[in-house]
Image: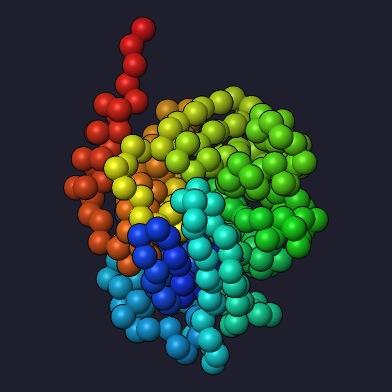
Length: 300
Ligand code: AMP
């Protein structure tokens, strides 16, 4: 099976206690595509400006990510600037939508309704537009962020009716639902229509809610976190990419998919930018999965 991913492709400027990097490769679609590409065939749908460095396009191509859906428009690539004083909390300093302003993508003919779809974090109106144009028959997953909950809550909630798996972080779940308790927040989101819900809690791991399964998983234990940017997107790409390759979805497969999401996210935060995530290899993923199993094992 294949997975189509729509989301932002960005040049990020990020400052953490470990340094400041300017115009590095970022964006929700980058982190999730690179992560998913370890498991499944990925079609990337997004837009960049004519200032987007060619070395990044080459890197995506080398990773086997299909970029026929990545439009190049005259103008500037999406830019995001953030600072982390506390590594658990991104302070957005600037968001420049640039070529995303009014962007309505053309869906290339090789993207058919057959595969799965990940609506990575981007304007919910654009997520809805993509959903309507593809009419996917596979699993539909969706991610978001505080900005869209503030600006476009109604559009987002309408979209939830079409979503199988909704991923968001704990603060966003509370913001969207108006609840303080994450169980109540998940119930609110389920009432809006999402069938499965993942609430990401940064270094404290993830919670999973569906009518048939509740599951909690810690984050991978790391000695050093240099840049948490994209951890959530990377988790989403890893989880959904793993699911895209499965014939059926059951509890065991959902748990395993979250393990892989967690492992991929752990690589993303060890260094700055999406380029370093792309350098991870399958051997390192398998090794870390084994270590994670040892870290989380317990006995009756
Ligand atoms: P995360 O750390 O998982 O929340 O994701 C951070 C990534 O999301 C960065 O690489 C940004 O380029 C991207 N991003 C930040 N703000 C937005 C936005 N409003 N819409 C889409 N992507 C964004």
